[in-house]
Image 1 (cartoon, rainbow, N blue to C red):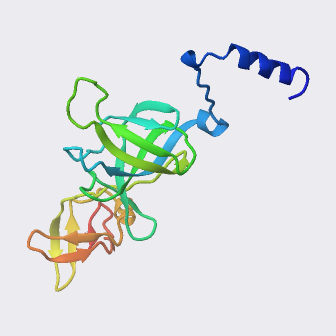
Image 2: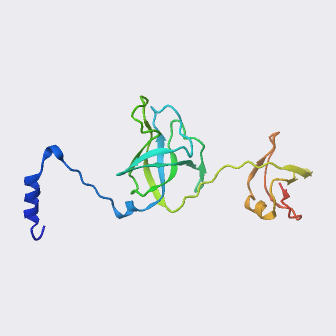
Length: 199
């Protein structure tokens, strides 16, 4: 609209050739930034294998198509997001990956290969964008090995699992389990300060 707006529209209409149609698209300002995207994804039921964390995927998201290394996770009780090694077979999980930003609720489609010669079903996963952020905290299960130093009735002092009282303090309240099945938890660091703790 405005000066010459109708004239330009008429000129475009006269020169429009339907056999050579041109499709124009544009990106929103939020889509021009790059950062971490959290999406809810599900492995496609016709895809043969489960997807593994940090295996490259080609993702089609909005106007963009890019390759990324997704980290699969699940939301445990409350706020903790725990890393998964593989996608669940018939359930949704979270995927965190570095990508161009897209508005929440934008659909995505992921492929392990875009090679046209493959005869197998190529869509590996489908999903939807949940959140955008500079960082997402994902925790990983950790196995540490220690040995008993002293054992009293229901208390044991464990050595060799941590190197300092500060490390022990980080893991206070964490669950412990022996090979024989006895369970317990990290209580607090011993006075010696060399990583020995009471459990």
